[in-house]
Amino acid sequence: MNKQNSPGKTISLLQSIAFAGAMLAFVLCILISVNYFQVKKSDPLNSPAMKTMIERFRNNPDDEQIKSEIREFDLLARKAFFTNQWQIRTGGTLLLFSVLIVIICLKTIELLSAKLPLMPDTATTNFWDSRTLNRKWVAYSGIFLVCVSLIFAFLTHNELGKTLELTGKTPGSAADSNLLSKSTGASTADSISASDSGSGVRQDSLPAASSLDAYPTQQEINSNSASFRGPGGNGIVYQRGFPSSWDGRSGKNIKWKTAVPLPGYNSPVVWNDKIFLSGASASKREVYCFDFNTGKILWHTVVDKIPGSSATAPKVNGETGFSAPTLTTDGRRVYAIFANGDLVALDYAGKQVWAKNLGLPKNHYGHSSSLAMFHDLLIVQFDQSGSANVLALSGTTGKEVWKTSRDVKISWSSPIIVNTGKQTEAMLVAEPFVISYNPSTGKELWRFNCISGEVGPSLAYADGVVFSVNDYSKLAAVQLGASPKLLWESDEYLSDIPSPVATSKYLFLPTSYGMMACYDAKTGTKYWEHDFATPTYASPVLADGNIFQMDKKGVMHIFKADKTYISVNDSPLGESSVCTPAFAGGRIIIRGDKNLYCIGK
Image 1 (spheres, one colour):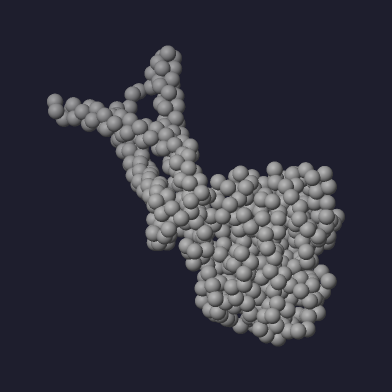
Image 2: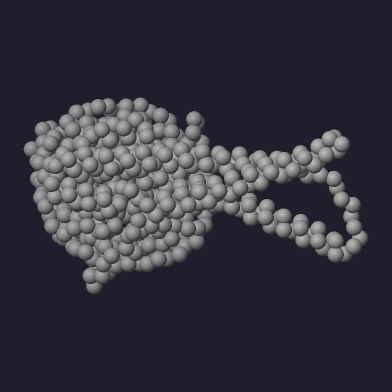
């Protein structure tokens, strides 16, 4: 008797376990979903309480009590992050475990249950068909709910990581602990930058950043435009909310316009409420600081009497000039280099911190490689005729930290600083190599032979692939790894001045004669080509899902970053321009031939 009833008892027990597992899974799905929407809705670092403390600090920057309150609030937000991470991991694991238990129980019940014979009666057949259909709907609904919950758990983790990300690392790292131990957390400064960018009015980070950290966090860098082509020199903007329509002649969306005293082909760089440019003639070199909100020139510094500087002006091409390289800044000092090899560091009041001459550049167009920063190191690409090298100087003192000779020919391209996921690399291009260096030590990491000629365009990088191009050479896509390899190459469209920009899916390549081509980043398949019918020297920038490409007439061609050419707008500046724009604080800063423009909604 017991033996005959044991299958029934087992099935009943399994049904109870399956029901309990299903209920647990259902409750976990609800909790994970609610948690996701709470995280999306709340932002502790931009809460009214935090904003009030920040405003109090701006009014009284020496109040240590307010500093302490900001640090404590920041720490509480991070503790909430760690707790939420644990909840997500635990909830996701329990959800998968409960679903697995339900599946095992149901499968076992199916194996233990006696198979009913088929009944010829139509009504009975419809009854069982109906039950089977109902079971399928219940199963499909459950699977859908579980999948959505797991997706929410993943998105919640990512959302929190973006909100509290510091220095490109997961919160809780040693870097975060060090930053939180200082006068204010770097996250606090980051949250201020983020909130200011939305308003279009920018202010300095709290407190004076130059006195707190040796170098800025990655999030501070991403909130500004500190070098040629933005963060890392890669042409990608990490902020959102930029205008896509303006007209310089009518004044539409032109916030201000200011004349630049001396000519120059360098692009503007932006840090918080300051914009920096340089200008030069054969006999005079100057650095300018503009107010981000008003366009007023706050100061200008004449760069002269540098030890070792040549009394004779170098010969330069008219399209390069005496001030082609774009400046860079670390939020503490601004750095500029000129055609005669003069290199200067200025503080944010325009006072010279240090200066030196690197030697008169030996090239037939004029020096134009822009500067780059890595942590507290100023990276200088100095590929001259007969002597090519890359060096790093201390931003604080100007002292040479490292210098690496390069077996390459003369070039005019600029470095890009890239975090590949495994390490940060400084990538440079000049005939015949793309070479990567450790930016901390100058040690070569890898090289790839793929280019020739007098290289002007800089590299582009996305998703483990670096792209190089030069006129009369080829376009090459190189897959990074232990041994870099060529993914694909093309010689249909080539560039001699503007640099390409890339996403994980697409590569956008401009030419100086006005053509733009879009390729599949991984295969080299050409999706489209478009002729702007106007020469182009500026490099494209990716922002808000759009590509911004300025032509020499000053018309900004804005189109979707997609495999189909979709124009968003063609916005005229009303003045010719060859400079790549800077994007920061919801505004676009453009240098024309005579004036500096601020574009804002």
